[in-house]
Length: 441
Image (cartoon, rainbow, N blue to C red):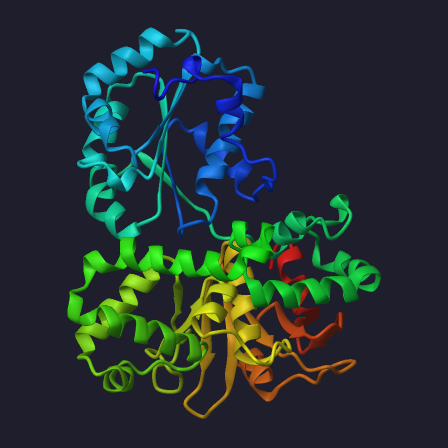
């Protein structure tokens, strides 16, 4: 128990769980709300997105709330000698109870849980004892978590995904604006914020698109190149190589680099297979690895009329534009436009607003970059980086409005904020760098 129970830890060791430069994450409050359900909490996401630091923050917050150290346990499954101890669930639960103050809840944090053999069964056994033990488990590999964990825990778990920094978290890390300004706003409030700070925010948005949101890279920009090199090589060695044979290892890397140059384009698996020199099945496997390990995000078309609208061709975007830029060996033109801007906007919507998105195109060629699905609403979002005072509505956006009559639509601009109306649809012109500031769509 000395290894995992905070009762035996020095103040310095406990303090080391929370980095000095920790940036409060948007999902922090959601984690505490999830713990009120008493279900197992799964915190997952890409490597180096800050999961271990977030666990340190949770432990620090619990201590501040008066939870005694002897009721908090932290085990890292990178240490293989801890596996037998965690796996003997009857003994583990007895020891947790002996150490703890009985009337208080017990917390068990298990980091890198996918490394634990039979992890799902072990967690199920602890949960089913109804022992007032809150389990918070974290892991990087969704592939392994699906195989080892999820099948045993139906109805017993809540899954929470941690991405690299959103733009707001990036701004907090940079301390680039007054703290009270870095928050969520209603769409009607954005105009004043834009008037006051647009030049500074635009410059930082451009930097964010270039370097991405991986916390260590944001906090230590001078280490950027070798941190990305380490991140990508570790990803290949730990998350990829076990799922592809040696003959496909280099082909997988070729595929990732190709996808970095193909973001936002209509995806043709057969053409990609010919380019890479592998069969379609292998290419599909590469896709699944990249999406389940949080490198790529797949967007499928929105359609209601299969005769007139595209229904199958997906598009792929990177969860983090900085990683994309590293893989493609940087970008020569960092002006905020085109596919890289689309990628950044899509990533912000997914990280900050937690909605599902699609894209739309008719067989006649009308096309809208993003369709946000929110309950029964279908909200079109046209992304343009044009430096105009007030950009004109595109024919494609008008076509979608005429076909689907949405209550509102968004036109993403360079730095222009404004409002308009077309038929019965409210249209909001909003700068791309303000997407992450929105409370809601």
